[in-house]
Amino acid sequence: MSQRPGFPVKLSQTGAAGPAKKAAGAAPARLAAKVGVRGPAPGASAVPGSAGAAVAPAPVTGLGLDSGAVRARMVRKLAEQGVQDSRVLEAMGSVERHRFVESALVNQAYEDTSLPIGLGQTISKPNVVARMIELLCQGVPGKLGRVLEIGTGCGYQAAVLSHVATEVYSIERLRGLHEKARTLLRPFRLHNVHLIFGDGMLGYPKGAPYAAIISAAGGDDVPATWLDQLAVGGRLIAPTITPAGHQALVVIHKTEHGFERQVLEAVHFVPLKSGVA
Image 1 (cartoon, rainbow, N blue to C red):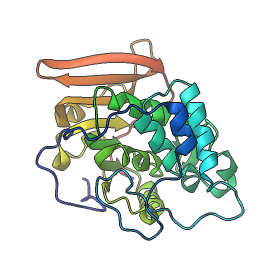
Image 2 (image 1 turned 180 degrees about the vertical axis):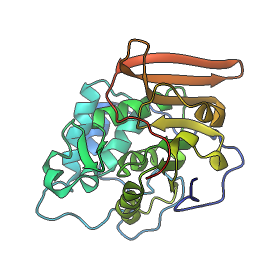
Image 3 (image 1 turned 90 degrees about the horizontal axis):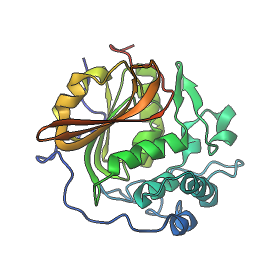
């Protein structure tokens, strides 16, 4: 059973991606030079669904990680690794990853590595987060519409998604992580992010249909409930076990005639589980 979203707003009647507002045309090199310095002044109110929705919390002192230059270096590395979508690079440069990792590991926050966040879960590598979101954005000229995230974790990927989607519904089955994400995301005032405590394998039908669905946990196959909640024209990306027994990224595109499935590179995610804990 799932709870209502932590930050509910009236659902849009359309569900799928809205009209395009901005093309992804900026060069990654130029973006790397400017990311991390946009957004409203501290204390300014955020507009639901706006590109600059985040309000920066009080800076972390003594760590040197609240500088936009630190995130810009990470973005340059992502571009070198093949991430090209300017919307994704800008979002990655806008969200302060060090605020989502344990204090003992904070100096590794901008390295391309996964890190433990408690309860046997991890925050994904920056490259994996950027890669998966870029795959969701393929073929969408402006912002994504409503997105469902399976596995909130610490809330980092939800924060990145908030910059490229009009609404983000993120569900977490572990109460401890759900509460942790609420605490970590609250200072950012991301009014288009809604946190749900519940069984991710069931999705969140009240918010359907979704323009995109992204999973941070991998199972033997993609649950039928997710496919049902995906809008026609929408894309789903999730780690899934292949016939060879390896975990790989799978992209599913829902068309009027059925589903188109593409298996991509090998990955390693935590296992997808049912129920709540």
